[in-house]
Length: 304
Image (cartoon, rainbow, N blue to C red; front, side, top):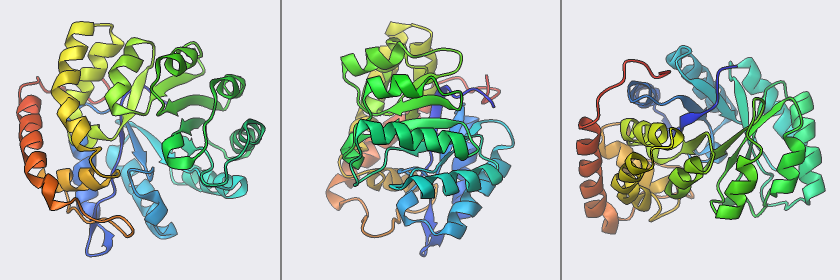
């Protein structure tokens, strides 16, 4: 399996007229690869996995694997609120060509730490793919604690964690687990730079959908310990991070991608399109981001 590190995009799923827009999905993947994105997550929360039909999930993952052509690591979102269903979905993702499974903590059911330990162990033992844990308590109502992560990191099929809690103590505890067999990744754009400077090996990002080249530059600088350059890129991207949080993800992102010419702003209910009150701000931010991207030297290879 290729490395899971650096700038990793939690891909949006473009829709048009109620159906998946595979032409726009191809253009989004190409945009990422041309900008230096090193990994792609298909059917995560940003990709509206909750709203996808089984056939759409299969088609999206198969399409991403084919379109990327080995130029980026492909992770499939396979987490559900049930262990058996998560194992089944992980096995299916393996058959479709995914290289790892991004497995969110079981949402809504609020398991104990022992339940989480057993859940992830079962998925790793029986799912057929390397597992990247995903902790985002603001969405799931469930917090995977660092002590539990440390136990799970000993499993040879559990290869990392995407952590969306960005407080200093949490970051330090997870950074200490980094090693040849386990990687700590930030899952929060606004605190991703600080996490990387503290030891995270990359970010699974929402914002990179709209700004692949600048976000790769941010990741490269932070991972190299270049604080001044990392801070400059972070400051330049912070208005985008803020914009993408004005309404629940991926509402603002879908509008941003449409503004960039990639698909429409269409979502599936109960998500609705970005409120008109934010459109002017969004246009201004995105115009600035496009200028920033144009000022950065293009990369010859997404794997560089």
